[in-house]
Image 1 (tube, one colour):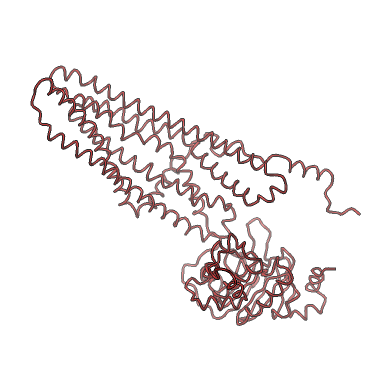
Image 2: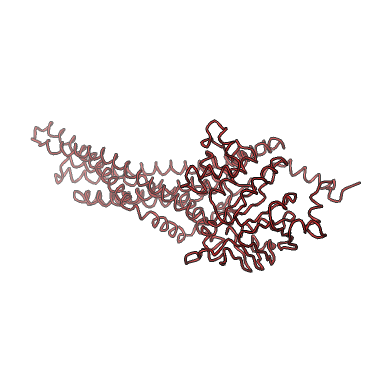
Amino acid sequence: MKRKDAPTPAQCAAISAAHDAPIAVPERLPGDDGAPSDPRQARADLMRLWSLFLPYWRWMMGGAAVALAGLLANVGLLALSGWFVSAMAIAGATGAVLNYFTPAAVIRAFAITRTGGRYAERLLTHEATFRLLARLRVWFYVRLEPLAPARLQQWRAADLLSRIQADIDTLNQVYLRLFVPVVVGSAAVILITAAMAWFSATVAASTLLLLLGAGVLLPAWTRRHGRQPGAQALQLRAAMRSTVADALAGSAELRVCGREAAWHARVQRQSGDLLVRQKRLSDLAGRSNGAVGLAANLALWLAVIAVLPTVAAGHMAPADLAMLALLALAAFEAVAPLPAALQLLGEMLAAARRIFAVVDAKPQVSTPAGPSPQPRDASIAFDAVCMRYAADAPWTLQGLTVDVRSGGRLAIVGASGAGKSSLVNVLARFWDYEKGSVRLGGHELRSYTPDAACALLAVVSQDAYIFNGTVLDNLLLAKPGAQECDVVTACRAAQIHDFIMSLPDGYLTELGEGGMRFSGGQARRVALARALLKDAPILLLDEPTEGLDVATELELFDTLRLVMRGRTVLLITHRLAALASLVDEVGVMDCGRIVQRGAPASLAAEPGPFRDLQDALTPP
């Protein structure tokens, strides 16, 4: 007999074709259309970054000051050395007397200042960079945490990791690769041209024009041509990280389905696209470096040509010609980093927009302005609550009305998709509700801050996360300052202490990624112990035995009976066999509302939704 839901031959062919088709990679990325970016938005992003950097302005300005001192010392060293060598040669040829002690001392001073300045520059600028890096990452994480879990679902985990690591690393270049070169270059150009003008206004003017061309026009050109490939390279690196993370996480499925080659091709395609953008940026950097070198040599020859008539007329010493020529050549060290800095600006602004897009997201749950109230008891009450996960999504809770008295134990059962887990999401303030009222401890739930609401709850879910650390590390998440006796008591109550002590390192045993060294039942017991250690008055259990075998499930039910004592309990489960010994009442949920409620034995004895659910879950 043919099943109603069996796919047709045409559908089977379409599925096979979809599986065999290569994974598509977009040919074009945002920004390929050549549309210019909004200058006002770019300025706003930069000003916002500066506001974040302001607490460390002393370190930033200190680094720029010593960088300027090192640069000026290097320029002065080259110019004065040229003058000194020329003057000594002329004095030797003519027999003139020359005081070489003073210039020799100044040259030594310039050399020492250059060496010390460059060391101090590395020290101060990198110290400022590390401080800015720490501030940016903490600032980003503090604003990221209130968005979890509701708002963060629109971003992939690998993409968020890329933003908090790679994008913030890119933003640190704003200081080291943009702020320092621009500030130092601007100040150095003014001082160097002023020194030139003391000897020759003509040389100062010609050199200044070339410096403006190399320090303003050329960076503007590199900014224009480097904006798109820089931003696209940033996007491609983030996409590659996500692709590789997916491939590693699903490597077993890819191998079983024979899709490894398709994912390899996808990574290779993205890598090729990234290389194209990097080549464009590299070509641009090479051309800009060549242009700066050309301008520097042109300035040297213009200085020589401009000063030669003055020297020939006897109005300027011959040694000054060498000094001015080398000073014009060395002046371009001040503007040499600027084209590369403006070339990277597109990548920096793209990273800033990616960061600001996350931190500007509005949390799904609002935080009250005033302090949270003190709970009167440990009761829970839902009154005509409506809740959904998106504005265009169907209602998950539809007029839900249910309450649990302080110290009471209620089980919520129902088919998958009935809205059971949404109760926990609302109580823990992960998602907000749109209509109705929820009261926790006698007060409206919205009057509590998310942290205050969570402090009243201990949650054990089917996917309770076990961190890659020791057993003790995972337990202390619930109560960082807990004493050893409290930890042991919680583990004994969760019936996991003896097993932990049987391990080679006891409580210091590493659990591995996701608690892989523990079985499912053992990991649930660790989660239970963590909830007990928190010692919250309300215990929420969301499918705590899901995925466990029958023997482990029965053992965990025995543990739950001990754990529930003295607490208000809301148990969400579809395992009905042990409810009579675990809870006082059962509420049957369907389509986001309670359709039946009563004692487990009474509901099992009469026809109704609970009986129907029990029959559906009982194997034939």
